[in-house]
Length: 336
Image (cartoon, rainbow, N blue to C red):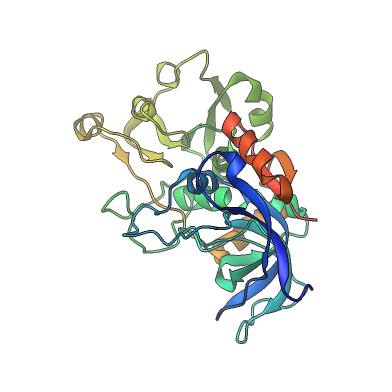
């Protein structure tokens, strides 16, 4: 292990992908409960480009904890290099993956080494490589905490009531909007794992991909409006958001629910008239849930699709790919 420095992608200012620089920086020191991970791969997620673009405060936080220059990123897969005193769950040489210190911008994942809270980590599934493992944490935990189990009692910054997932079984139908993306393609598979019928909404080029993941019905949103074709759905998981999110309410049966991953603009009178609910939550790091997801990944029950990979030194190119949109699965940085 190097004794003092490593390479990392950092932001020295906010702006476009071009502000990402490949720097030499000190290897992080371990705090209480931390594990030093030699990073093999890093998942690229929306908060990374939000931070790059100038967002420095997480929803619900009273003030920013970001000071420039900053290393972005939350999702890693790698090998344990050292452990802090008192950490018993992991040992040097263990392969691990995790979403670090989220919700915050303190993950510092775009680097060769990262100091990770042991509680945020799980053992990497032996049946998948580091690239696929790095693509799983944020997207997988978002899908898990929206659909399966919230897993914490922290209040949501988006609503007063605690988010409660809808029971999914063979009698349930779930519509996933943005089904080809990171959260969407994993949510689709989790819904199928629970026995539900799944309707996938994405652009037409993704149909065979989503049917291969188990979609029972596919809707090309560039040709048809889901609310014109689908009705009496039990649950809508909307991973897209924006002003059009509320129109998906009309696909629901009375008593159904819509879960917007990106909270949108909903009309309370319309919600009441339709007899449905809208609920959201904020994904949080959770090593125990990630271990459960890891077992599904190891068994092949759930698969992480990789849109593209880029070397850590080419983080700018990864962000440029993200900006073009229509991502199928996950973008991942690889670390030599």
